[in-house]
Length: 190
Length: 297
Length: 96
Image (cartoon, rainbow over all chains, first blue to last red):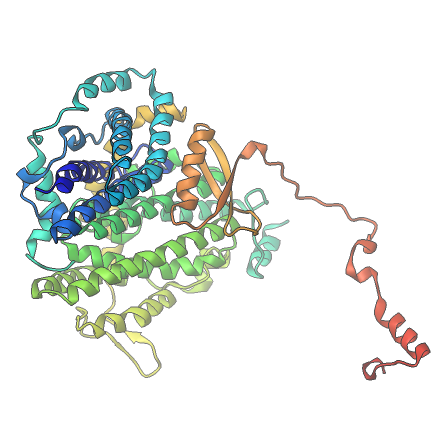
């Protein structure tokens, strides 16, 4: 695997899978205004994944969609943390959102310092969107910080933030659903 | 103002704002109508969101998520109007879940394939936008105003639907079959969507200028706009009688009005399951609203 | 839940127009929600978000004694201009 792929695929896979999980709240979030706002965050994450995949795809001579959908499940590099299916638990959803945004900020900061101008440029763009994600996460943190289930959720999830290396047991299930239409007619344009 | 004066006022194009005096009957019918619209947006989200997870490309995933997000946004705009008329959204949700209030027929049906995703965005949204454009002239101004934003956003949905359909129609045979099969299933509900024809003189919604377009007029507009689009792709409509006569009127097999009534009164194939989903997700997030919005349980 | 009114400016230089309202627990949430509801498509360059209670509505205006000096119909110039032109010998064909 190229250096670029090694660096960017884990991040792209995280953003893809987290965006996928967060988009599961679209239509059923705690209240309508929040539903709209949280959906934008999920869409942004997918957008970040797409842009990151594109950088890798350009180098490998493939497409962002092929990287996002057509790898075998065991080739994905996302963290278990990003994969967790948390609907309908809003406390754990926001806890992960908060923890993820904090960790991701550091990761993006490092990418901004890359020697590769394409990577640095994309990282700067991503960071400008992520600023709003962080504001959103902090806003909710302020409101929920005294709520026991939120405190418990933070405690439960914090140790998982930096764990990498293994896919979650149910990742294959996510992959199945994510790719079912695409696999139904191989090679088709959708 | 007397009720007669109010009637003359709205019939001559007069607009009503939130704090204006309005007859009790006008207010009641208005709330019921607008609430049903809000309910429909909220329930319409459920069949489509299943496919967000299964979208076959990143672009489709984004477009579909954005579309569903728009529907949620519309529900927000609409319920705010109802709230300002005096009915809190939690009461609206109570009535929706208990079956006391209704939502449009099309959202009681299952989605089975990616073909449904295309057909819904292209044709169901098209049928809806025809009614919505007519509501731009609603006598109740706050509702007319939100319809502007809603109509503008719906135009993106139709484009998305058309794009999905055209891509499939230009693709493999299996993809073309998905579209035709979905169309065959959705045609009946689409024809019922605008409701059975009611004479304007008998329709209080028309008298109060809440609606300004008759049901049959809306259906004719839909057929005029979209049957040619369907036929030009080589797709067929499962109604052998469907044709435009010499006077430019579309003739068709009489829709199953009994089915429509049966479905909207809560007996559609997916009604119970979807209301149950609304009920459980609402219960699971009750603590959030209590904590953050200080809403009474 | 507090209701916040949202005003949007579509393009720089245009007036801020009332766009709708959002329900939120406080102003930071209201900002986030208004931003998404009225800006996610890039349809606004700026928004004003105001708690509904802060908006003072005035919808009754008194005009009992015909203050026509405030209106265009209070200035009947046509006849006077016709007379002045005749006096100056510059009457336009349309004056007859």
